[in-house]
Length: 308
Image (tube, rainbow, N blue to C red; front, side):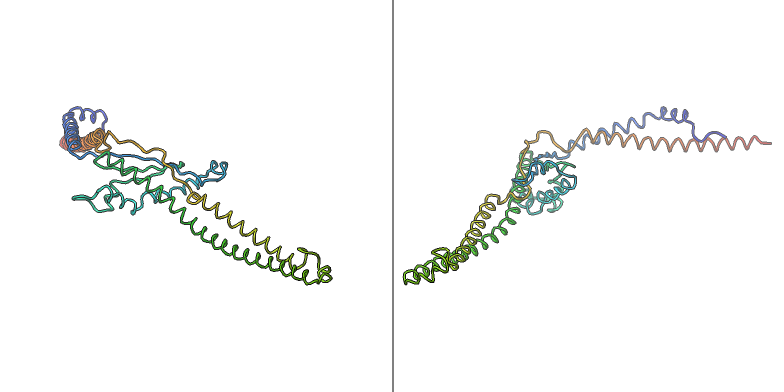
């Protein structure tokens, strides 16, 4: 009984049928190349930003970043890929003129935002038929993302600033009340001295050292200190407004692409050739198996016929 698979016979079969894979490869090259040339060209423009630590943070802390911190920076991808920013770009650059796909599909076709693993660099890529428009859209989204991040940081600072302003108003009222009480205490003390109650005044201490004046003076100093602290806090918050969180800075505005990103003719041809060779090999293998089975069945019939 013959071996169901013989490597030499299989290779001989492939050599005999060389015309089939040749025709398949030639057809694949022609079809894939022609189809790629007929497809509309699209260009991809890329813009890069860096995510930096808050302003005024310790340099040693900012350099000793952890994988968890770097992973948390992926939240900024949602800033750049937000529907609101993309809708503004669509309206600004008229991306939905004529027959256009739905908003969600258009966004998937045009926009891609990524942060490479273990980096603080965010890349915004826009793919459009017009290379200049692709770069303009990518740059617009990058600048809008930076502005959105600043406004988000500033919103939290504004709330904190309002609280400190209220504290400043309360400190100013307390300071005004303390000043009035202090000057009133000194006026009363002078009146007592002018009315010749020197004996009573001597027992309580001269001038500003009278108990009521000392108490008012202590309250005035405390109110003044609180007022100065609130003013200093407001100056600090105003100076750091919008920079308390991570900062996004544009490091690579990109260039207008000159080579289309799609269709990739070479890649399409390679994939088509590989598919054609694979299908041809599968067909020839199946053909070889069928012929082997038929030859084995014929040998078996001959063997049975020769038996006495």
